[in-house]
Image 1: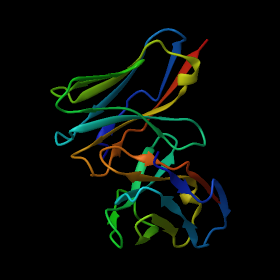
Image 2: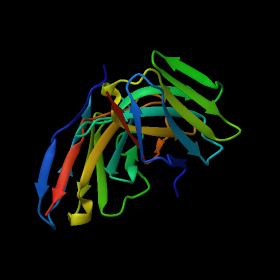
Image 3: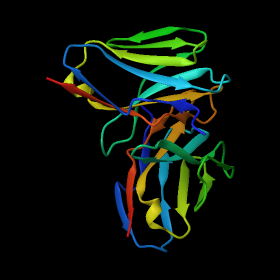
Length: 112
Length: 110
């Protein structure tokens, strides 16, 4: 039973434009959300996170938005760069220390 | 920086073999996790451990076991490898809310 859903398996964006990756969750107990980026043959690396007490967190070109009432979060990358091409995983947990639940991932391709 | 080291990047094993995947972290974290990643299925939790000699089943524990004899080391064991266990295996350590992942082990069972 998938509690974290990324409904778009892939996304293609032109360099310099905005990339928007979406994530939905079903468990109302989730209160911490993260995005990970993964290149082939490497482990995922942490990108950005947000706790349920906030609705936005920004780090350079990356911004995560959380809509708790809709159980939806999104990752915005502005401007997109070819080096951003990777698989992005959304993850969530109920309380720090609990196991993370991951979505299936969205493969982002940024074209020059 | 926290380092999570998985002993092998690539492994090829035969069906029926017992396989050990090793993971070591260098920051004295209590929480460690094993996931597998498959195309179209994302990251699925196999087992995790909150402390030495403690283990909890994740979402897909069948065919696997784990060992945590020391805090820094968390081993995943495939009791009798099967072809459907061909996958990328990822170990993670967790100091707080987020994970630090190892580089992964690409296991092929033939």
